[in-house]
Length: 199
Image (cartoon, rainbow, N blue to C red):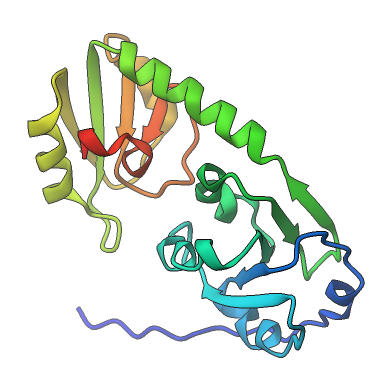
């Protein structure tokens, strides 16, 4: 089946960003595709444009981590910044639709991640979630991960990850998510957040 991808753009007034007081000297600026044109028009030496993030994939943004002191996300979704917590740098969000500005607590993100890692380390039986949707299907990576794990593990393949279904598998101590990393649950950790020795 042929697919046509159309980039939907939205022109927004980002004048309020100029009034935002961010103490760090260099700030990595990133957004989603619909606001990219507007964000590129911001002319300020303080900001380093990192590009746009697709869904929750911030791999491209991480490439500039050594060049900036903080990050500012211009967008309407809070989940886009979740992967930045491990960088231990200030994270800010500016919502162009509401004009709201906020700071994300990197300490809270890191504390939350440490808690999940401890649960994973203590787990005896784990379930590895694999999504069969194009763009999220990491079946081969999941199989490689399973071979490296020194735990009893099972692959669960689905089209949509529903954390409510975890109740049907009470013997699974922890879940490893290879699909969209914005899925949240106290017993779920993203594959990309596991220590390198398990990847």
